[in-house]
Length: 318
Picture 1 (tube, helix red, strand yellow):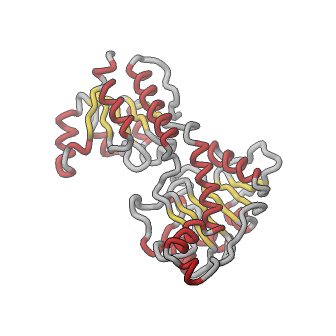
Picture 2: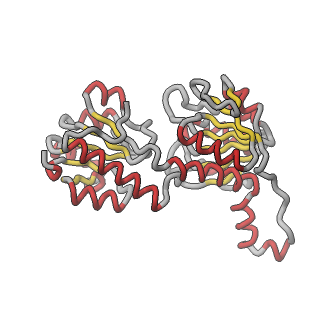
Picture 3: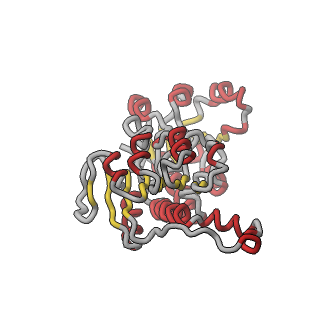
């Protein structure tokens, strides 16, 4: 099969370089070119040509899209998390799925530590204080809390969780974790449940993947165990945390602070958070550096090329 004949549906304008390269190497269909009420018709008209879908953390191949594309052979996700891909349906239809692991590990881990320091040291809040002229008007900023030497707990000790652990260790932090199984790291304390993990740490960093078992894993009990001096950092997926409960825990000061890169209903963050001084918010930028997005795009392109040329995929999802 010639690569130019591989029809690729790009679901969202996610990366200019990726879009440009898809356009030059394959037969590209841009989903947003059709008005929202004309999407079903657009898919019907092009269903025989579209054999690949490129999605990301926010837009991906759900059941309805897969059903509308009878010629679909591969879903290449511009993300490591594939919670928005209907995997059972892909398996049932023999549709291959790829993601972009490893290349984004360092950036997401950097951001996790950055958010922890930002939340504890109130860096964005201190920045606003200076910009508002308050340093001059009111004097020194309030005292904050250190990050070095804290007890850091990691929910999910996969690639990203492990990279966070290594960074936190360099800050003199002790590491504990919860994952599906105990890992071969004797220096890290394993907890069999999340409530105990939260009760025995200062900073809880959520770094697991989202699935039916992990949905709202960080619930009210976990937040209460973390307590009024505890800090919650989430760089995983929004729905790993019960967001309304998080809002009330922060409002009621049952939880000390939070640093969030992900939210339950992106691109919306709960507006009650906007006025709070104990939370740092960023708009799902974990892997959004020039370097990493280029590497992720190249991985998507290489997987599609491998598929078109009948070669082994680079990063297949089992």
